[in-house]
Image (cartoon, rainbow, N blue to C red; front, side, top):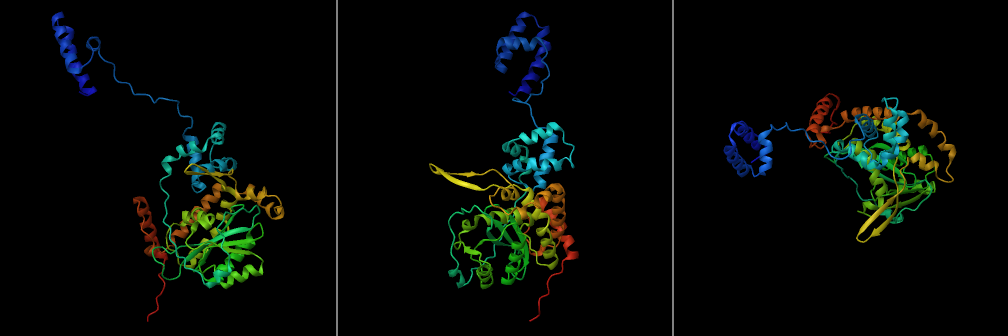
Length: 413
């Protein structure tokens, strides 16, 4: 018998119990105890007095500390920062709060809560928004030439304490098909400071890769001292080999089919490229120009001046498990400023630049440019999204792309 049916049963017997003589009341009590299984004294109490309406149950434990205002500011900062890990979000909140006051009416209590909030609490507050960002990766790397035997293999862990030693890799924007010419993103990350530079290429010719690398080396706030690449033919070639020899740059490579040898750049391929562009196909000069405009300006400033990152300090084996110890989250600029012997002439102009910039305005500009870039994608050769909302957005972009995208001409043979 359910609690609701018990209440209905008691209500039906109450009027008869109140009017019944003493012997009849005893029989009614016997019936109630046998039917409901309750104690006799309990049956007397509920039959004498009408039951109070059920009150809503109160949540046990402490009341919630963080309100909707705190959650709103935290969610906006998390989305503007391109959905960082909670440890990184904890590090960037103090840096972003002075700029957040321009966009939100933040009270002193909310600011205090955001400053003292733990990373685990941030995870709980953002739990509902953390299931929407998944991308698919594609690889189009082909082995290099016999020149790779002249380039030493580097498989051990990096132990550098000065900036300038970098890992590089290409990210393919080929969509579902590797045929024809399509865009590639040349990604570069500094091992010591985690500084990242990226350029877009149409194809992956040897000359284009070298020219993009020269451009990125000129924009780095430190001299380029060493390059570590994979075994793809776009890197293992005479153009890049002679460039490194001419400029006295150390040139090493990872082992074939061992992506862990280039773990630093593989991680940046996700956070700086795939997370923004996904697995769509881009193969037009217009997309190349817009993507390079984004890489050279807003995205470079956002990731290097405002986005903290962590570095692995050591690994400790505890029984059968391997524990990783990381350092305090810092932005690449802060890590360069804290490096002994760093060239302050190239770093000092970046500090007033960061003071003038607004990360929320940068995030809006990045989002607007990404929208324009995605409209130039070749949606006919891009992977179909799996989520219903993603499929709806894909149909809108595909409809608009029919007005702007012209398929390449195929020569008649």
